[in-house]
Length: 331
Image (cartoon, rainbow, N blue to C red; front, side, top):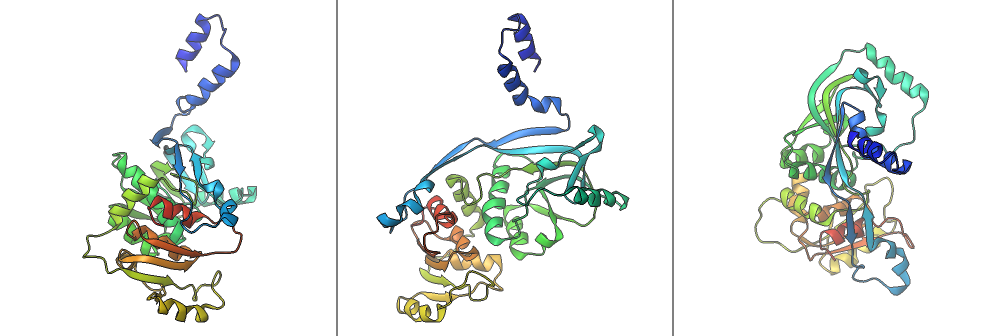
């Protein structure tokens, strides 16, 4: 910041005010001790090919997805942080830093803040250093695989040493969360207190907007999740959502005989561990399913495989699985 002010003074303050403001914005971290920004990934442009069976009449549903652009992925280190529910405080600098907490929900009301502050009376759980990678949607299988795990992949590729991930107990109760962290070499630590005192919390931003992916990052994550296996069995799988509370096929019983005529297996994923799902879909060359988290298992399929997504007619928003297939070189 000093170099910009010195330059302005040397030129008789001839620099435009906008240039000074821009300089302040780029060096704002120097004015906020205890908050440190690191860029993990630069901005990105993702180019995708149309679905292999796209009809001209449906092209408008996908055209806006053929090229997408988004900004960099950052890691922000917050020192001497107090976490009280959804309220984050840095007492040393007398400030609230809630804005760094990843969140998809609506803005909280003031009475929610007061409720959080009341938790100061509880004993503190103390943590030296940890990563914060989850948000309000991370309990969903699809969002855990495609939003959270790419963050950890980018963090590990940066060469940083921290491998401790702070998670609420509700997330750690999910088998795919525990198993994926173990495979990638991260150690989860449970958030067990109403009040956390953290010497350094590192918050990793999204690598891409939800439903979008950095192709090469996702492919490297895929290779790390897959265990060495024997020759592929060339399985064809239909994933049923018959046990789901929403988004299920009303006439699924009529569909099953047709699928069986084409050698397509009928499977439900309820009760399967993450490793069992990885094993199953690493041998799958054709995946058929209704729009839902089961299609996220294409992450384990060989490149060049095929995915058939059954989706709502004229849906131009739910293109997350088309984008994922494109990134994984799946048709």
